[in-house]
Amino acid sequence: MTEDSRPPPPAVATAGAPAYPAQRILLGILFMCASGLLFPIMSSFAKLLGAEYSSLQVSWARAFGHILFLLAAFLPKYGLRVLRTRRPGVQLARSAMLFTSNLCHFFAITFIPIAKAAAISLTAPLIVALLAWPMLGERTTPARVAALGCGFLGVLVVIRPGTALFHPASLLVVLSACCYALYQILTRRVAGVDSPETSALFSSVVGAFVMLLVLPFVWQTPDGWGDLAMFCGLGVLGATGHYCVAKALGYAPANIISPFQYFQLIGSVVIGWFVFGDWPDAGVWVGAAVIMAAGLWIGWSQTRKRQA
View 1 (cartoon, rainbow, N blue to C red):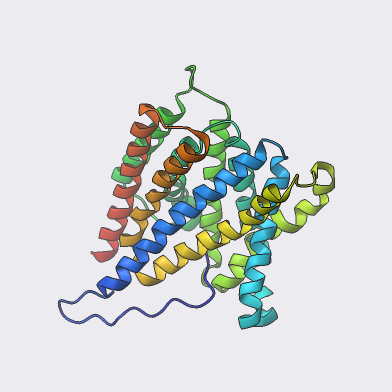
View 2 (cartoon, rainbow, N blue to C red):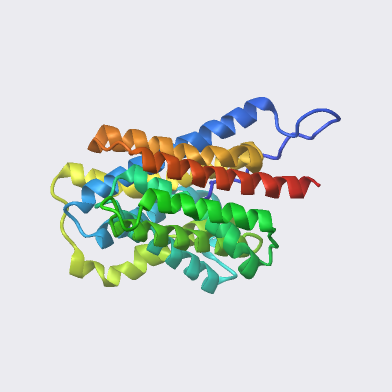
């Protein structure tokens, strides 16, 4: 996630007054909800394009458009210094994880509904909590481990392995969530070293430029202006969605904003129904509810620990 300027400083708290004005908190919530609509629209473009084009080409367009969009936004203000990083190895690893996550997700949604994929993707925060202990040294508790277990049981409810409703593409969404969790953890490692703008640009380097070696073997010229517009829209929607998330976190505390990330599931249901006529069955709703409950409980417990 990124933004083209540093977030505004929070209002100074006084006795009995909140640290963030109510109108800023509301604005932050609106930005987070906007991201929850932009990402499903991006997924719908990827699903439509994936029916005729290689997922490698679709994923490249997502990454390359992201780079172009951010260069246009950042270079006039920051100049070439925005391209300098102190941790190139970690930044490239971040980029590889994000590209792999997008590639798995885009390939999977050509076979399964967007809402089902979104429900499985909600496990990414749970995987971050699971990996934060061995990779970042953030201690956990038995209660959080139990919550993680419940969250992953929710994934099984959504996927339903061994039944006629199971599709192997669902496992690609699980892999996508794992890669995105690793991307988030690596982002934490460079958060205090490189600027958010630099990290935002490097997040798509692998997908945008390394994939140029493969692109000639899978390239298919867009068939008409509609397909071309969707290819261009992938990067713009993705970058704008991350911008909205960053703005949301600048306007309100993370513990207030984070629960609204689950609005993306509602956006995915609406877009999936409106564009593809897909409506989640009861298993998807139940599994998603279990995953969200586990994620919200872990987030709440971490916030309570910081306040203690």
